[in-house]
Image (cartoon, rainbow, N blue to C red):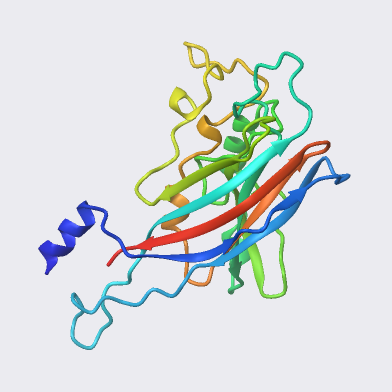
Amino acid sequence: MELILEILEYACYYPSSVLAHRRSPLVLADHQDVVGSMHYLTAHVPYLPYRDDDATPGEPGKRRVIKRLIFNITSGDHGPGSSAGKPRGTFKMSRTWLEVELWRRKYPGYKEDHKPTWWDHHNRMRELGDSPVVNYTEHYYHGYSRYRAMEEEEHKYKVGTWLLQRNVHVRMMNTDHDVVWDAATNELRDKDPRKWEEGVLDKNGKWTMGGRWQKNGRVANGLFIRELREGDEMRVMMRAYKNYQCIVGKCEIECWWDI
């Protein structure tokens, strides 16, 4: 039985289920904030039963774990284009995007667990530089929102916020995106040119543009998957700078777990 499980794991043969989906168009527009925000979809991490095949008598077996999330998205961007026209149809200079907020049930000591350390703050400031549009992280789990005031609801608090997908810059038609967050795939390091759109880094690994534009408008997020807990709530949020419109036609979240 153990050999069979190893073979299935090597082949990435995982059962899956759709956690949430929405297929109604929604447009974030005409907001007065510098960066507007609108909720589109909510999904909850399900309860995954224990495996009994490797259990010690009288004790529960191994807990199944989530291996992958796949976000199937149709979205678009509308707003002012570049005067030169060069970023049109690319992810450079894109001012609209989708992100994932992770909300978790409160527990004793949750505030202390999510208090940033000095080293986290140092790394965050080094990443930001002079650009206000950096929204990724490779140093800590809480996403790029960790240095905002903690957001709370009556029974939940926000763990963090992560980039999901940038829209193609000023493209007339909506674009289909399949965003895969796999537990085995981590975000590339900042100096790796494969992480960025062409021209963001020069041949010496120096920044050449006014923003850090991720390759294909997204990044890998294995750490997010590995740290998910049962009952966590994922909220897909639409975001747009003032005078831009973020358009979402559909979003589906598919969850894969080990057998």
